[in-house]
Image (tube, rainbow, N blue to C red; front, side, top):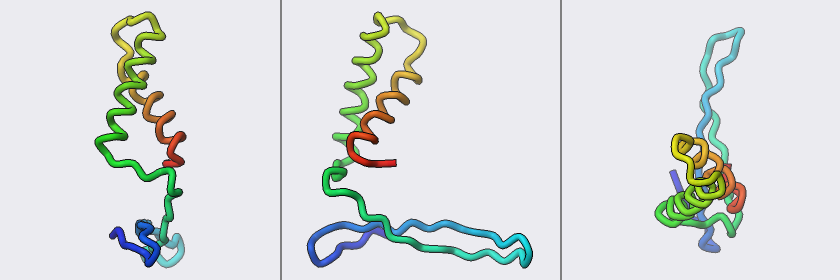
Length: 86
């Protein structure tokens, strides 16, 4: 669940489930992830940037059709790196 710190910074709780091999018991671990301030981008702007970059990659390939998924994934990777996202 997202929360707010006193300084207005958002934090995100990340849950991960870990199983112990010996006992078979499951534990849920919660850790806080604090994104860098530069990474604050809303979903609409993020998708717009990815769309524009994917189109640029398409043009760089000579506007050849058939590889749109690769263009999108590469664009998405570049934009995530730009904002320090995983």
